Image 1 (cartoon, rainbow, N blue to C red):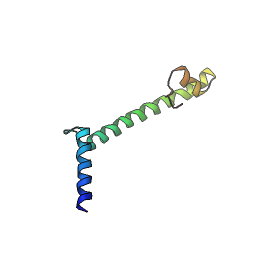
Image 2: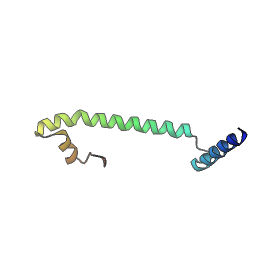
Image 3: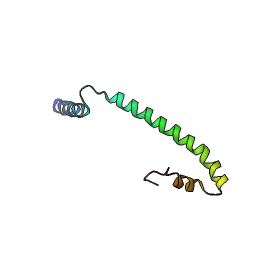
Image 4: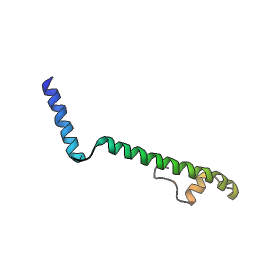
Amino acid sequence: QREYVEQLQAEINALQARLGEDEKAETIVSNHIKLLHRYNEAKDATQVWTGPLASLKGTTVRQIYIDMDLLDDAN
């Protein structure tokens, strides 16, 4: 049991050293969540206008995304 706890503590110490002594994982996760929220808001805003724009141009939303270089590498 003690060896297992020591092994886990060594792993924690190694990860903390890799992260940076003054960095807190909770802060990094919190900032990441904020960035994801901002990304989702921007994506939602884009989707609001791409539909009507596609209708006006007589094309598809996907084509609008292609024309405006809005597709990510996964698509």
